Amino acid sequence: MNIPRRLWVFGVIGLLLWGIAPLTSAQTNDSDDARPPRYRVEMVIFTQPPVEKADTATPSHQGALPSRGWAWPLREPNESGFGFIKHPEQTHKLAQAARRIDAQPGFTVHWHAAWEQPGHDENRAQAIALPQSLQALGLSGQVRVYLARFLHAEVDLALATEDEQVAWILRDSLRMRSATQHYLDHPAMGVLVRIDPIENNQD
Image (tube, rainbow, N blue to C red; front, side, top):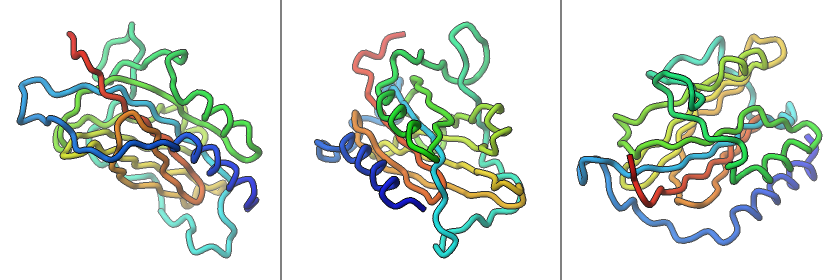
């Protein structure tokens, strides 16, 4: 593993996280109002050079990642379906960070998307399936954002190794601060997440 290169990426992400506001609890949940609050979610999923073989973290999962519930891919504004509507690329707030990560040798941004969704609780929150096109690159899984006392971002990803016999697994949940970039690290993958509250919940 190229340590300076990995540290450089941590530095870029650290600059994004600089100036984080104190963690505050969510102001409302599904039981408080008939209509839940709405949020704009943006997420970047990328692969990075795997750790050295001497590291204790190794790919171990056999076969495909098992499903953990219903998940729908994002859809274009003119498409019908159950998934949330994907926001245009020109609205991405993490575009600069994604470009810098993608420019590093061995790092590849595979998915960068933004969407709007309601802040449902863990039992009602809808998961987003990664595009099927990423399966050709060995990447599959789903992501989800839900609102309990705090906002949470949940990722459930599998990255197949070259021989496709095992896969790296990233299955984690992160408590979020709104309007702030957060980072999930992994020996072979990384995820940037930002969630912004939508002030005026209009139809």
